[in-house]
Length: 83
Image 1 (cartoon, rainbow, N blue to C red):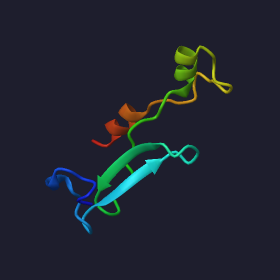
Image 2: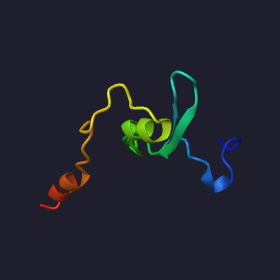
Image 3: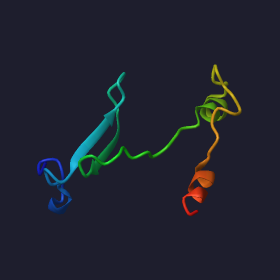
């Protein structure tokens, strides 16, 4: 690990941390790296809005575009945690 991580304080400790690397299965592009304790759940960072990407940036709708494909329920869910 010391050959990859610099400076030395950033080196993960074997047995205390694991390095997870996420790659695209088609092209091999690396998307993310996590350094976490063993058994730690996968860190969910984002959910891309593909409908918006296709419409706004590519100028064409996604083949299966839908207004209600996703509803963010974060506020509703976390509000129940305090009860």
